[in-house]
Length: 384
Image (cartoon, rainbow, N blue to C red):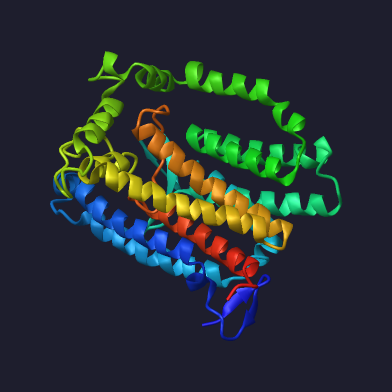
């Protein structure tokens, strides 16, 4: 094996980035293995009812995992500096996919949302790809502006990024997928803050953002207001607005310290909606208990700690910003998914990285980890 250093120079005798960044590789592999087991456990009842087999979702997730591991190896092999030249190509591809999914001829509509493209053998969610595209564009743009010393100027350091984000947010809102917009906005804000854009500039749009969020959450769509009410007072209507949260909390409560055991969850028996995707963390709490939940959070924490370390140590501003964006991307997904299931945040459909069922999210998450591995291998060229 050889190691990719300083954006792609291979040095004989060093490990490949895929194997070199063990504090990313091992937690990802462990989480993915737990994911396979929990997807089977959480989905077997639904799978039998819908597909007359216990293994439908397990088989598909196994294929997704196999493919995604290959993609992670490929992105770990590819010198990360190449993405700097490809940032606009990737961004335009993401925008094109976001436009395509809105077409009735191409996009799949489910639950009053048009978020998926059907490619025959698999279904793809463009909004997931758009997150990574936005991270790479932001990293490229911030690094270019840092090179010319213009990050401190509002119309150079903030305005162009706000315009690109606004375009992608408008397309995603048409699906609609308000939660993804919030996540992408937080990633963009975090990357600009880390890059050194003045805090005053970053806070200046806050009144407009708060007004817009309030409008879309409370006034634009009734179900969003119902979710807020269900979040604030779930036990007032446990059979209505509070159905998801109350059953999620019951799962954690009944799991106790050690859990009921794998396969013994009751809440997955059509009490919790989407137990193998959005609420799989609740099933983990019920079957593996506090110890299992804590172990999973520690594994995520190890990846996030490594991502932060890589962002600090990399020798290029583009690499630092890319690592920052990917770390924020993973961290926000974990915080939001676990926060929703624990009743700390309003209900939002967002997968738990590496664990929840879903091909697009798993592939994009693995690709992001591969990029982070390559940046880390470049940053750590002095070790070993």
